[in-house]
Image 1 (tube, rainbow, N blue to C red):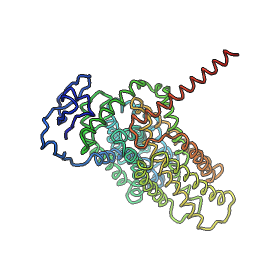
Image 2 (image 1 turned 90 degrees about the vertical axis):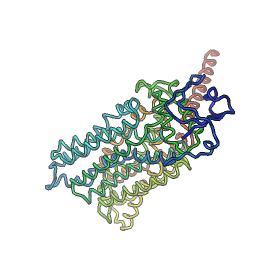
Image 3 (image 1 turned 120 degrees about the horizontal axis):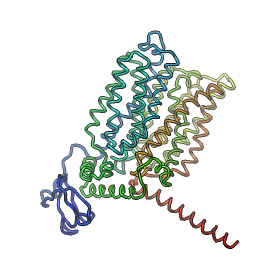
Image 4 (image 1 turned 30 degrees about the horizontal axis):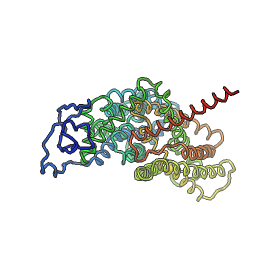
Length: 536
């Protein structure tokens, strides 16, 4: 593949003799320094008619490569789904007389919950590691760790072995939540960045569905082996994927960054690739000049970055307390409180399938309709159907009305529709926004902070859901979900910042401009107050 320098690449003009010159250049390990101090890695070739008319031959276009790389990276999210779904099909077996790992009911609950110890302990370290060794290799570490955890599950016959297995998986879960959205966002061009970002949530639900189905069909031993195969597939495919260009630029490795841009943008005009490289480099340099990424304290003390944290924290609260993830964990309890027409295990499978399939419209629409409108529609739909399910459970549990069987069908559809609207916006779009909102110099550490916060909120929701169910009844959970979703509708309509079709530089310019306006307004108000005080 070749690059063409011209009027839009003034940095190369000293090398090629002015704006009207045209020289074909291939990326080779030859260093050329321009007069303005910028460095590019090219070998010059004379322009000929044959070269001018030659179309680069590539196996896949850049868009296809970005999607394939995103799918490979999202196998780590698939493994997270396996972690979340693993316990559901095997808990009854583990606490039975035929258990391959004998344990009490209390021990089984700790097997489920021990994953959270890993989730809490690692996110900040994962964020720092992503800045030090790269997004790719930090994410790659989860492959061997997942393989090790599944091997422990295969061979362990003690409850402490399963505790270890789950804690290791918790380390992987936190790492994936921190790094995978960064990787997906940084490899993607603007026009498909939202769609590539939704691969994370789709893969997660696919992993849950995978465990639900195979857990019902396979023996305990074969179930663990089937889960191990996914970790092996991830390591094989992700090894072939390049690092993100942004990481290389942050490390001053312009040559590697340019090569990576060439791979991820294969088939595009060479001049456009060079322009994107120069724009990305300028954006990262501006981010570095704007602040420091040396400490976690700087992440929350910078006012622009703090605004992004608060925006995403609000979105995180709304997506957590709509209870979608918790409903999956308590599927048999949730659906068992009404008259059901299929077993709770099959309801869990159906619910996971609905969540996975309903992510697909978001993948198609996110870069066409925009993030904000989908999130607003999502919160509105979640609110409406949460109140509908609240009405059913209130009538069935609290008022103890003898409802016709059709009402249980309507309630099941209503809960599924909560999942559908969740998957349209606030579910899958949180991860892309987490990458887009933060500047490059704080992106990894900010994502680590959000991952830690998300883990904490989800744990609170697990406990709160069960407490409210035992204290007041299932209807109270859906009443809370309806109220919080309605609040989310208002909040997201006002505060969520649209990023559709915008580069990272344009997004940061929006946040910086907003902060500058607020600072200017505060200064004017301060001057007015000072003048008023002097008059008095």
